[in-house]
Amino acid sequence: MAASVRLLLRRAIRLSHGNTNVTAAETAGRSGRRLAPSTCRCFGDAAGDRSTHFGFETVPEAEKAKKVYKVFENVAHHYDTMNDAMSLGIHRLWKDALLHAMHPQPGAQLLDVAGGTGDIAFRFLEYVRSQRERQRRRAARTVQTPSWRDISSSYSSSEEDGEEAGPRESGAVVCDINKEMLKVGKRRADSAGVTAGLSWVAGDAEKLPFDDDQFDIYTVAFGIRNVTHIDQALKEALRVLKPGGRFMCLEFSKVTNPVLARLYDAYSFNVIPALGEVIAADWKSYQYLVESIRKFPDQEEFKIMIEDAGFFCVKYYNLTGGVVALHSGFKL
Image 1 (cartoon, helix red, strand yellow):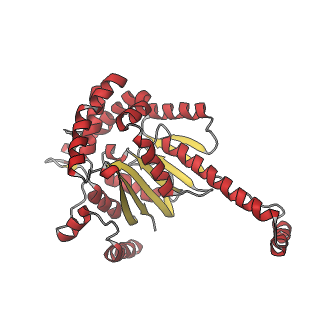
Image 2 (cartoon, helix red, strand yellow):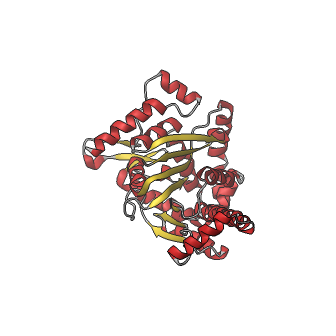
Image 3 (cartoon, helix red, strand yellow):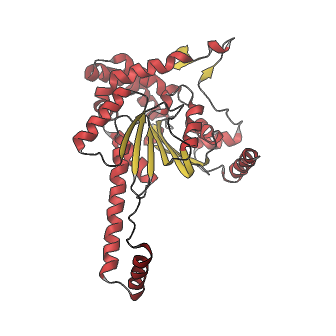
């Protein structure tokens, strides 16, 4: 009964608030038929014949996870260097944009999935620390010239509680299926002296090793396109978030400008694999990464998938002309 009520509520909200993104793609969607969400799967004659894509290659579903694991095992030690080289450093701006849109407050609990090298978790902890410092400075200014009401309140709090309770500590959990990526992230954390509030967990996005309603924010940056069953990963994201929690996904998407799209294709297929060969001695892995971007659902399709998983107030924001899109939704 509760599930039926939630479904009816979700449909009602979509009808009243569905047009949240003023984009050419959405305008086309309103005038034509609504696309069915892509789960990146096709089916053979029997259940055991299910296949999916690995880049432009078709492989059995059971093999994709192994192949993806091998790719990231190969690139783990050059991952951050290649990110800078491939994006000309712009990936740092995209991740900063994610944090500013997230705007986490002290006490927030983050789960960063497929975040092995720790980029998002490090930014999250630094952002929360800066927010806490800002609050402390504001409180210090208030204490310098307290009113009689402030003094009276402080005495009342001391008598009732004995000691003023400090704010709850924030925490970030980095969850990645690839142990080599986690090792790289841990080494980065140790080198930077980032240890407080940071945990590392080996886990599958399709079957997260966490209880229900655990986190305030779930992030996945440039990782969800490598999941075999994206719909299942989205359901898991919904499950582990607290009511009111926020899902945020940063992922390569569909370029909206035709001229930029042609330039981007030429750069992706000709330059990125070559950089992979020069920097990481691995052409094949970076060829797959480029192809996986082209197989990922576009902005509108992915928005529908997020809604169908059970999230509300789903929106997306194009960055760098749609090279990357930032998707956001809430668990109500």
